[in-house]
Amino acid sequence: MSQQWVRNNWHIFITLLIVGCVLVGVLFFHAFPAEGYNLRSENPERKATILVSYHTYEWWILTWSRNQLLCRLFIEHESWPEPDEVGFFCGDQVKRDWLATGPCAFSEEITEAAHCPGFYLHLVSVTPGEREIEVELMPPEVLLDIADCDPQPPENRCETLPKLHLSGVEPLPNETIINIQGYIGDEPFSCKGSECVVPLPATGIGGVQVSFWADSSFGDSSEIFTALVRVVPWGDFVAPDGEKEDQPQWYVDILSRQYLGRIESTCSHIWSSFPPVGGPPAWLSSPDHPDALVSDQPFYYLAGSLIRQGLVDVSECYDGGLQPSGIANQCGLEAARDLVNEWQNQFDSEIIRVAMDTGIPSQLMKNIFSQESQFWPGFSASYKEAGLGHLSDLGADTVLLWNPSFFSQFCPLVLDTTICQRGFGNLDLAEQEMLRGALVQKVDAACPECPHGIDLSQAQFSISIFARSLLANCEQVGQIIFNTTRQTAGEVCSYEDLWRFTLVNYNAGPGCLSDAIQETYTNNQPLTWVNVIEYLEPGGCQAGITYVERVSTMPKPLNSTPVPSTNTEGDQLVSSESSDIEDETPNQQQPTPTPESLDSATSP
Image (tube, rainbow, N blue to C red; front, side, top):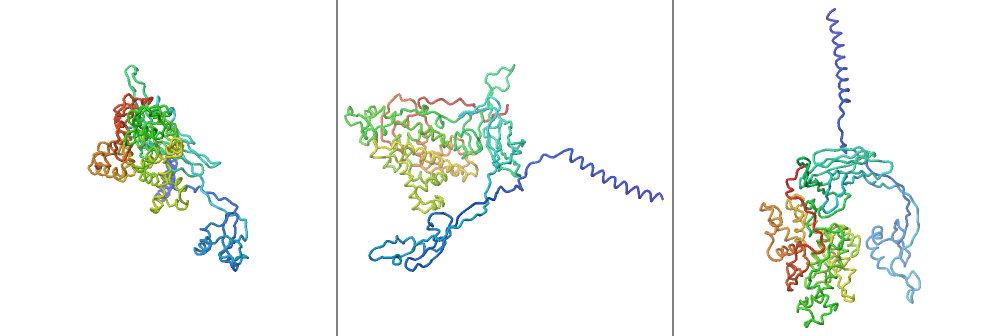
């Protein structure tokens, strides 16, 4: 009997133990909830079905002679069938014969329609209809900004520790952003709702990678956006007795297509490269007002061009104010000085506007124009280049190939839209040549019938094309470096050196730059300007070194008049005074002093 009692109680004990374990597990699960992140594996599709009305137009193609039906076409637009539609429904032979058919005009030989050759179109019916179509709905996104600070370029300086402000946008009605989350480096963050403010840590010079996304009440999430964020502290964060010589401050820079702040340099985004802390050097600056671009350089080629157009009184110059080569001599320059100063500054407002629109530094553009054309935007027959930036066929090829958005806008002005849809690289050689020639012609402002021999409105328009050419060169330089190193340009090169490489690419060509980059990398040397130029081939390639030095040197106020010459460097029209300009243009504001030794910057 005792054994039976033991067996019965053992079963009861086992049952109670199992129930107890289950209860403990349930209690433990609810007491410590896990922090969950959306795995984004089963997002519902953002699609909708809508009902649209349409009309079907039935056309017949018939012969004039026998009124014989050849084929039927069904299209959904009011106008006559397009040639491609005729070919689709009727075949290429009927299409060719139909296109070759002229109007049926009565004459002595043709007295009735049956005598006319070829085909004619006849509209048979118009039938209304409805159909359901599936459309893609706009996805959610997250926009990025800085909180507790309004960093103004180019310094981007904050007096208080900046924070990252993320705003979720849900385009669907009746749906909302329920969560924003992401990572700053390896540190996760998460905020409920459509707004998120996250403190930013101090970073090194290279910045920190930020990834972020939004979750929607629709049941899906946005794409994962990225940003490169740099926060560099500067000043006395720790001082004895609370006395501080320097006010603590932070330099903040963000590279992201989601950033709401002003885009100071589009090429920074292309390269993932930050400008120097505190703003770029003067030659890569983008002042907001034309007065900051004012220059008064002694351009002998420009003076000669103005003299040849009869715009300058050179009666006191015994030789007409010109050298045999056509550029001004000393007397001619002095006679043309006021007009030269006025002429070289008349494009400043448009340069500023284009810089704000494209993110190409305005001072850089003006420096390039001064070296390339001395602001005389006519066609240079000697060098087969045109415009303020002396665009060549090679330069036109670069912008058409490496700036797809520009190509898609420009190509339909020259070729049929269906041809342009293939992309520049897939066009045949004749079509590419036609586009290159049309683009060079577009920037050529030479106009013999115009009052000054120059179409000034065309010259102003060409500035935008030139800026987009520089953007294309930025893209090409970034790709050259990636092809060589398998790293982004900003990971292996400084911002300033990347611009120098871009100028070599523009001036000497991608072959020169690519070979020098490859040789530098093969020899295990850092991709710096000093190292790369050692591998530029003699001749045209090395001429790019002088070109870069001149463009990157800010001119100083005019206080002396150098002797002119007709020196040429690397297919560029220059004068000897070009090598003497340095420092900065008149009225150019000095950049805010930047912190030194920032490579070792640490958090406060």
